[in-house]
Length: 481
Image 1 (cartoon, one colour):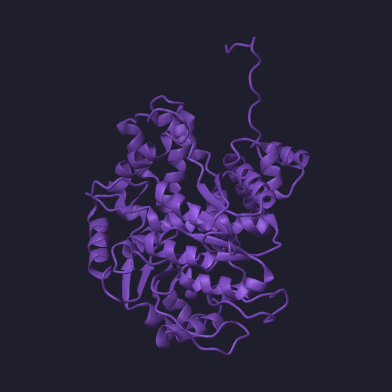
Image 2 (cartoon, helix red, strand yellow; image 1 turned 180 degrees about the vertical axis):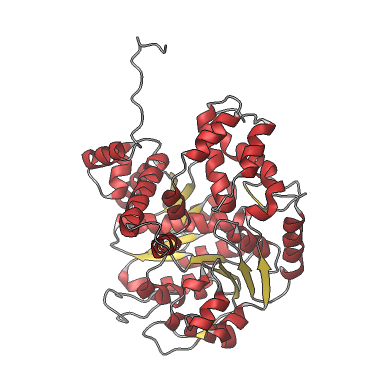
């Protein structure tokens, strides 16, 4: 299984530190405790951490100076601050210096876990290199393929990475647009500055503007303190806006202003805030058609489309499928605790013949299922056919994005193919989140139920209904026929 992320917790309140450490460990983190800022700084020089969670007021070295020194030494190490009400302005100043986020005490543990998971993921996106074809650098993230289409993509990355231009990455869902954005970032002159990724389709419309630009205290109901937005967090660095076609009209106007003037105002604020941010946007949608329909601004499109990089679908690069499959076998076999299984030429041919509507992401998920189905043995063509036949189209769609799933189901309903789009989407979403929760908890239903906000009995019944209930272990005396 993947190694649990190691977090450095710096807190001089022993009782609070102990409680926080217990919660974090119960939720999959490894925790190292320090009670002084200078000791914490020294630990970051001696060990690798996925994130730092620190109080703002500390003996030895305060949180603000800690952020300053960590940003200078390890700019890709995310720091989350815990602050009392009276030090909120200092926390904002620390965020401007490079801290990932801050939480005002007292805070809900769920809020802490969400912020910390996001911080760990942001750090991973910055630190984990994207391997390009024909490079020897070790990485679990890679642009894999020898096809002429992928070679052109890699050449284009090389041409645009070092230039201060906005890039629009286009391609079907599941083709790897985030990997392209990360590769551009890592090969740019901003590679030591923040890389912040936002999925515009995954954030509710009424919260998206605040997420991007921040808000002032009292700007809307629930805005109890000033928040720093992602543009300020990405200052001097790169902001990746995935699913840019789902941006609401009002937010499109504000984004256009930032791209034109490099300034913006927080929600509910009047101060003009200047930033130096490179924007990389991505979409699977037909923006030209949206412009004709009046749902996407033409002037914003031209600002984003300074350089356009098109990612081919998997159907356009079938020659890469065997290489991709072997890459995913190597990537996930260790996670499942099995040897890398062999796969026959006939099995690879069967995979190459599939239409792959979900592209590389769907192939990756199918390869993981093949590893489990093979149980350490060779992957036969029969196993491939069974795995492909067992795919749940709606579940695969939800894995891409709720917005994309809704559009696809409604399109099918419009064509008269289905009459229950609402039921299918809810069922697929429920199946997906339950399956992921059970996988993430390694089968621990108590832990999964707590994450989902369900009772263990309710979760168990839902798992049975959806066919996700794990097989009970064999009794010691039983034997297979």
